[in-house]
Amino acid sequence: MIPLSLREEIARRYGTPAVVVDLDRVERNIARLQAACDAAGLANRPHIKTHKSPVLARMQVAAGARGITCQKLGEAEVMAAAGIDDILVSYNLVGPHAVGRLGRLLRESPVRLTVAADNPVTVAGLEEAARAGGRTLDVVVECDTGRKRAGVETPGEAVALARDIAARPGLAFAGLLLYPPAGAAAGARAFLDEAKAGLAAHGLEARIVSTGGTPNLPELGEIRGATEHRAGTVIFNDRMMMEAGVAGLEECALAVLARVVSRAGPERGILDAGSKTLTSDTGGGLDGFGLLPDHPGARIHAFAEEHGFLDLSACTDRPPVGTLVEVVPNHVCVVVNMVDTLVTVRGGAIVGTLPVAARGLIAS
Image (cartoon, rainbow, N blue to C red; front, top):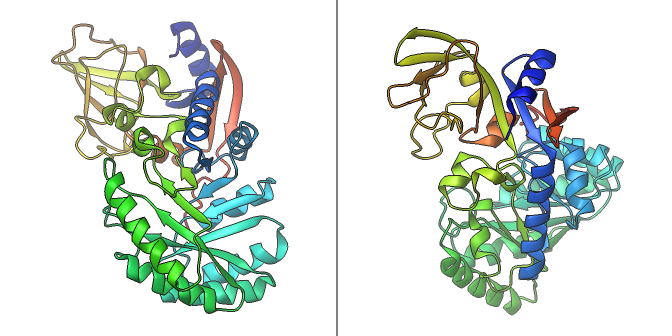
């Protein structure tokens, strides 16, 4: 992805480790996701937790996205301030701090806002926020269809919570939010069918049925009744998406440029990118902590905070001290949240830097 001459120029200007984004690949990935949603008859609502950048969010909207998804309220505040006008917050907002901030966002911004909930405590807080904001708040019920993370576990619970939402002043029941495990479209479809029948029996309709996940893109359109899809990682892709079979190396738009700073033994080395850059996420079972495309036999087998431990025993081209290497991270979303800026390139040349505007805004 990064030619040697470009690596040297990036290192000279910005030092290493540097998180580098290829804008040509980003644009292709944005277009690929939009085309897939269009072909499936779904609105595209990309998840910005991956890039945390209003600039990239505007590129996604300009390419045809209906709006965006944020995981936390801080992200939504940044995106609304940047002029993104249709935002779904796919997370339970609980507690007085979150409720107060949500109320202020509703009061001070014209953004069309939808939030998710999977329990009555969250719903009660949303009612309070809507009252403080002085306008109606759309709410979707998050449903667990096998991931065992968040969400009501049965269609009956989804209907009961929808009725609670619809009965509260200032709230409007807007629909259902799903994030099924990869390969579980049939189960999600059965859950949705039963929930929609139950809603209809009480005069309620799910205007929005939001599905999610880059790993679920191969099943796009298989959940009958879905209206939109939320995919985040696809804008950059990473080693996890390669392992899942939804991206190839040529579709990975972000890499960490690192330098070999030690070769104290013939079969080992040290990169200047450790756990504070590449993260210790093994992506559910990947071997090592990143892929070195130029040195496929090399393995990042361990971390200290600023040290990436290289196992070079299976590497036929062992990089000497000073070598600039690119690393495709296991989990790109976490890597982006580690840095203030991304170095952007296009056509083999440096474009500049892009602030990670919503970096660290993880409080809900």
